[in-house]
Image 1 (cartoon, rainbow, N blue to C red):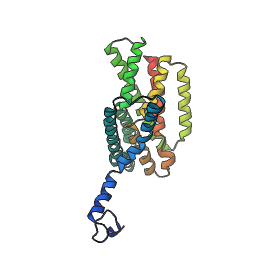
Image 2: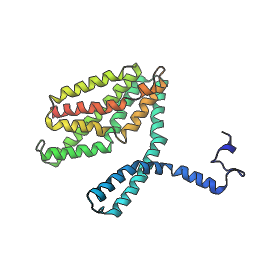
Image 3: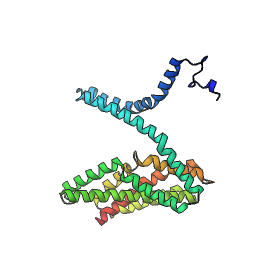
Image 4: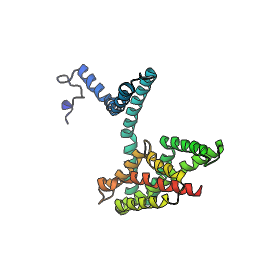
Amino acid sequence: MHPADNPLVSHPYKVGPLKLFWLKTRRASRPLIDSAMALLPIVLVIAFFQLVVLQQPIPGLGEILRGAVLVLVGLALFVRGLQLALFPIGEEMAYNFVRKGKLWWLLIFAFTLGFGTTVAEPALIAIVDEAARVAAAGQVIGNTTDEQETYAIGLRLTVALAVAFALALGVFRILNGWSLQYLIIGGYFCVVVMTFFAPPEIIGIAFDSGGVTTSTVTVPLVAALGIGLARTIHGRDPLIDGFGLIAFASLTPIVFVMAYGVLY
């Protein structure tokens, strides 16, 4: 595009300073608008049930509005950060590993990436702490702070190891061109078998841990790694081979956590 045809480039005959300021402002506010549209259904559902069904005023409306503004700004910044940093760096590192032929290092990178992102996952931290409190209340473990912390840390590390294994396996699948559906079917067959041996108290936690693992920190890097790897390797289709790592990352924690329940 010629600079004179670009609406964001100041031109004495086409774009005045006020119009240029408006165009730049609209472009900068686009992430906020997108985040507001994403949050709007949640706001409408809560407002409808609170005001129409329950017919009660919204308690602490001022605090809720301030919190909503913080969520809006935080979500906009988070999504923009993914676009600027996490997605590009994941694809670039996958490309560099393959280009230099360091395939073992690629597998090690995938393993450590899965472990590191899962350990830092806020949703996982919250659910393992809650699981430890509920387990203590149900007398599955001792009702002491040390036992609850040990149980929570054990769950957290188990899930992190499961995701690390899943990413290494998923990368190995992309490198070798293995079919995704057979691995997924085999994985869920293992899940069904494990449910017969795992304690009933751990089964629900295992399935929930598989869901919360693939959340805000893990998903962007995992998806970028898989897509970047499929784009780099000749003969791989990013649409067919690039996706599927997240499916592994949500499947293996179920098996690993049930095994943790058996051993614990």
